[in-house]
Length: 412
Image 1 (tube, rainbow, N blue to C red):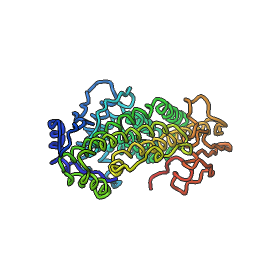
Image 2 (image 1 turned 90 degrees about the vertical axis):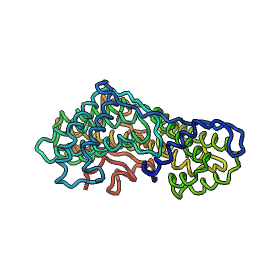
Image 3 (image 1 turned 120 degrees about the horizontal axis):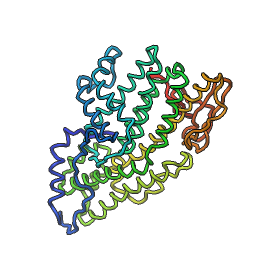
Image 4 (image 1 turned 30 degrees about the horizontal axis):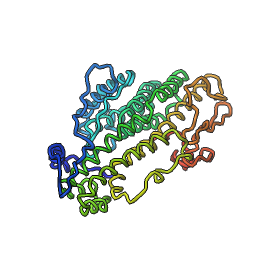
């Protein structure tokens, strides 16, 4: 899904929101008042030394953003650059790791969906840094030094899911990147450290917020998008809509261009109401096994001339649910793998069953049943049945994601 850049939209955004707050009444022949779906709010300012992990992550991200400006436009690093990268973000990375041990209470303010997140680059850098520390441990004779960054990555992921869909999905990537870097390492970590990793990840998952809070926050972002479209329509600034949504929304924009002013109030009320349909759907299926989930299309009916806008503005909440499924599944599988290897190191055998763990730790989110698990002495296999709900014996076509799901493999 394409996103408009800040540079493209800045000339219009301020004027549009100012107009939305100062023109109260009729327009284009319609006497109906213009509804306000969202008002601009100042971004949250994190507080130093608050004891809240949320504040510390944002402050760490700000430090990291400045530290890695040299690499800001780089998607990948050459191996010879990794040590310098780590040195640049060392202070911010240590701060984020300390933050992961603190209680976390989100301080969320809704985001305009067309503006970039100032903290996103820094949080991504921190996630990359955690992965590089694990990679360094893998290359050294001290595999156990990966324990702290692996746990911190998962704590950070579950904490960030207290925000909105974009925050959560970024957090889930941080945890996945850590697991990928640890794939070739875990066999070399001692049993005690493996148990610490496994139990810490499962505890973090058990303490993670319910998906309803993330969905509620995303609903606020959706209404920002509705306000954006309504303001552009009121100003007849259809060029801005074309810039924001690209060609994929042309039918929706053309409908607005020809819409009768008298149809405007109902159009935007129904457009905004659909945001809640998406959110209610996401909340209703979040903890259901995948094959049992009803289809979103059953909740949507009628002509829906705004549906091209909806696709752009509302589907991130569906992406969040899908990413959450993968995160919970692979985090549990990774934790259980660590615990099984630990038992193998200690007793010579993988466990016959997993005991004394937080509720649902052995449950496959895709089936609602225990993960398929087989063992023979120290050897074992554990996996998820994946979206189709069918046990294919752990077959993943080499990518770990379909038809069954396994933990991440090492990056190539």
